[in-house]
Length: 226
Ligand code: NAP
Image (cartoon, rainbow, N blue to C red; front, side, top):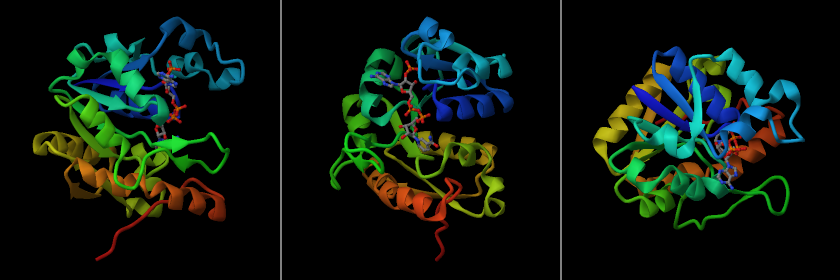
């Protein structure tokens, strides 16, 4: 499949690399290709630059948000949660129409420092905001409850015995995301229901952030037992 991964951060790189390894045709989306490749962020270490990562993943292309999504079968939103609606608007509503849009972003508000709070109310979610803004996109929320490396290598923790969730209104889109999750190695996927059920996984983040602080590792997540 053609997969557009919108986001050049840790999550975008990890998902793009994993999907390319699985044989998909992957394009990473960014605001400004030249700025991203030149590592314009003065705070970033050279070895952490996008260009350094891209050299390790030659099959992955880099393009603008709009170019990346133009002919994609699946679009992954791995952009900063506070900027996701802007990033998706840059991608273009016409490019998102009918597309499966896997949203892994979190609605984190860092304005008061760390740990961040959420910028959405308990009666809403970023996934719903995205679905409302792009009604013809087929939004599926998933993977936002695990750190980037666990998204693509679930077996590195507890032999993969932990849970990820899917939420979305479109059954076929959820089935496609489920298949991608299986390909990545996830074995415990709970379909929570429609897109409003994304509130649950998004509101898990305050607990997840405290668990990471208390246990001193991002390699921590939930296992649902019943
Ligand atoms: P990030 O630093 O949160 O986001 C980087 C991306 O956001 C870049 O592609 C950047 O575009 C884009 N962006 C930032 N400001 C923008 C703006 N004003 N307009 C348009 N685009 C903008 O990267 P991340 O740490 O990889 O996280 C990605 C998402 O996954 C976040 O929502 C995060 O909460 C979620 N998440 C992260 C983890 C994790 O382990 N880090 C785990 C689960 C979920 P450019 O490429 O143009 O710079």
